[in-house]
Length: 407
Image 1 (cartoon, rainbow, N blue to C red):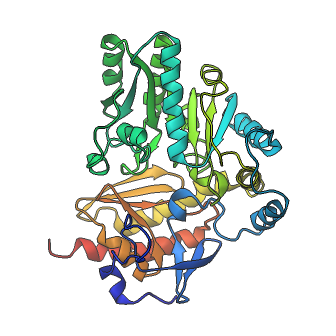
Image 2 (image 1 turned 45 degrees about the vertical axis):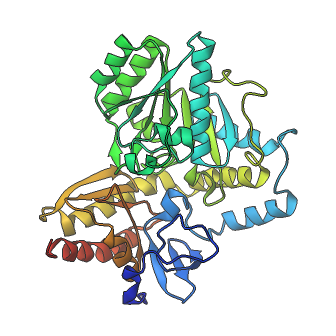
């Protein structure tokens, strides 16, 4: 494997001159991929431990997906929602069958799916006669960067500079049912609880199964909507179709995106009976959402995941990866905790570790660092056990060396 130039880790802010300066990019231009590997414009190869941030479910250049998308591009890319789009019904029916829910609305991203969920909750409250409906949200949450989803997000750093934030959100700690029950007793304006089953940007923080079960009970008792953001943790990443299924519950509203289209932009709001009729004609809409190309990508992604047994692969290979990481890192001073499920893995260190993003790329590995101190791994669900061991073989020495550097 050819490694990038050593200067790479010192050049984290190189920008393209005509592109707005909103990302601190690594100076790498990725131009092609195959399976769990990608190549840059200089011919250097990298093992993809990030999967486009949980987007590239089927990896790159999947031999079943590529011809299906080529066929769809030749047939129809876009059609206005003024007309029926048969692939929407096909994908919606499959998502409902897999989730046990009732209906779906399609959009273009996780942000839009979460924005739509917030609109559903507010309309649900207004329909019950609540003039100023409020939604319970969480510390360390991340739901997007629009003004409303930013307001629901629990990260002051990403909120800074964009006030005034949208009102109507009540924030509580994760896995603290007493805090939710306190709101139930004291706040008559609450209409919904909105959380990620596993917080992604917040540092791979999981909701306990008993906590999710308690939330379901509380929402039923108070006629609230339980809204579970599965944008990052859903669609097979934990070894089940949706992460909340480990708790044996059903949500009322479930935003999806990221891995649903294996790289084609797509989002979805999947709803149960309590929320299915909240929005009617004229209440919500989108120009590009539900277009035939995105719908075909979703249909084919789910079909290939089933045919290739990728839920089981995520669970099995995720276990191999965690075992290999623990063999190299567990017990080292500075390693705080391993978290996650399946192929959604976080390694918390006791210090900020953003420098590892560039160092890993130098060594031929794509990773993420989130919440300042958490190494995040979200590889494609087609990852093999051998490739999982290669990730650990590259990453563990880098972390070991980092933790021995002088403070």
